[in-house]
Image 1 (cartoon, helix red, strand yellow):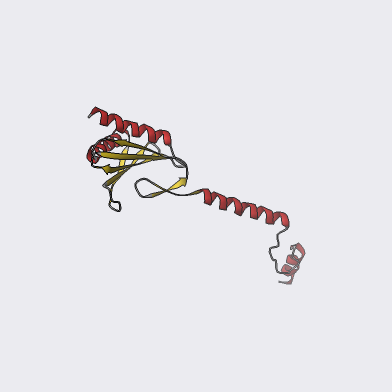
Image 2 (tube, one colour):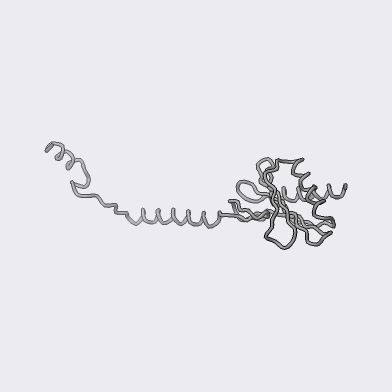
Length: 158
């Protein structure tokens, strides 16, 4: 046992004393920079509200397009459902009850994009559609614009 203690003391940089973590100034700067980077990353990436009233993670970037149509809500909602069924997979349908107007919403999956569509009756014959497309990182305005125009084309054919 004495031989083991002698070997330990000879080969140990602490000479048998308890070791405390002591950082030099360069190590402190590296840790501070790492924590600052993590903090900035968390500040930029966070929860993003969707037009259907839910939340998703990602960057806060433009991701939605609106359109208004002189049609009742049921016609516009059926056109939105048709666009979703033609291009992707319907995940969820919502009836949003916490607003004064009649509001319905959809959540769908298009390739790798999550698409949220909100259909709201502004007046009995005036309906507003908001299409929001989100990738795994941020928004996709081009996809949202394309889907909103497909809804308009379906309404024009009716």
